[in-house]
Every structure is written in structure tokens, then in C-alpha cells.
Image (tube, helix red, strand yellow):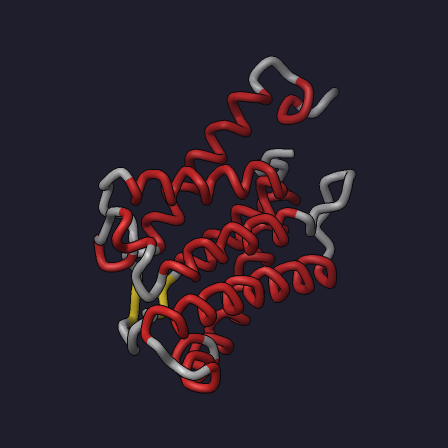
Length: 185
């Protein structure tokens, strides 16, 4: 019997629902925060990484773009319930745009046959988080007029342990959903 997620009449709808679901979860993750400085620790990266693992590069970037669009037009989906274009150019704006690269890189972890190997997933997840760090710290440095050292100290170093845990947890969840044949292909 063929896998209906891949070839059936509802396959496009299945992928569309997962894309919208992941965009909504990214927004929900922005509400789950621990304010430790100018850039809060949130569950948002977990859902962005998970979106990449489950949706693939194109649809993960689409989910992240949908989230950014929702926040830009005024829906309170950014951290702390914020919204609007001003938030995108604020101190955390670089991370938000860097998360597009995170979604893309994590989306590259799945193999052509739909598997999600641990090593490949971990590599993609860490590369994706690294891309968000680079974009976020660069923007943080510019907006707050910080040195590179200070930008890294407040915008990268406190988040490394948390984000490693999020990468591993997102990969474990994604592998489980792939094994259950629930995840889109």
C-alpha cells in the first residue's frame, strides 16, 4: 500500500496543514520565554528546528516566513507578545531573520528517502543555530552599538547550552514522528 502522505490526493493538504501548524507553534514558542537580558531564552528555536526536520527546507522556510509575516502585520507572535515592523529592526531582529537560515539548514537534514539520521540531524541543527547566532549577534552589535565580544557575550554564549538541548530534543521528536509515519514527506 502506498504512503498517502506522499502520493495520495490529500498529500498537498497534509503538507500545508503541517506548514501552518509549525508556523503557529513557532509563534507559541515565542511566548515561552525566560528573560535573561536583551535577548530572551525561548522555545521558539525548538519549533523552528523541528519545522526544518519535519517539513524540509522549502516548507520550513515558508513556515518561518509565515510567522514573520504574521508578526509584521500586527499579530502578537513575537517574544513577549510583541508585533510590528519595529520589532523586526529591534535588538532581536537579527535572530528572527537568522531563523530563516536555521529552518533551511535543518530542512536539509532529511535524506531523499525521508529518514532523519542522528549525525546528519545534529550537524544540521547546530549549523542552523550557528547561522541564527551570527545574524543575531551582528544585528545586536549594530543596534545596541556593542563590540563583537560584548555582542557574543550577551547574544550567543548564554544560549549555547539551551540550544544544544533544543536541537537534540527537536531531533528526537522529529525522528519519532517520522518513525510513526505522521510527519510530512
